[in-house]
Length: 157
Image 1: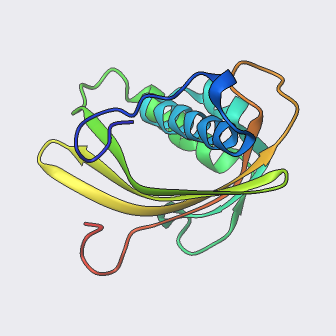
Image 2 (image 1 turned 180 degrees about the vertical axis):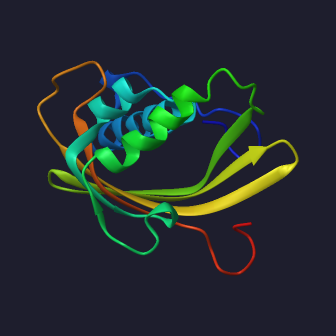
């Protein structure tokens, strides 16, 4: 994902990294793939990256804890059905990312800026990933929980 200055960070090759750096790189890649799958309406990739029992708090859930991927599949289906309608392109930028790995779990927090036309929406996101055996080329981390919120201070509009 682009940085706020418009550049992309180059990721060093695997052999040159410490375990902590490799974990961060893998989490960064998984998170980017996840956000890309959501933006592109790619449910197959999304389902490979997200645990079946994922839990979340997000604005669409109206304050309720949602469990499972079915809640989110609805939005993929709606987007697929609306694919015939031309849409405005959007761009997602990750700002202030932090990564914390604790054994087989990791927490990734960041501010996400989504630009659509001349409108920018800010969300604050926390994603909890669990390490698993690498079963595909999509990585060894699976999303198990996330919290996404729009700040009440007006920056989320």
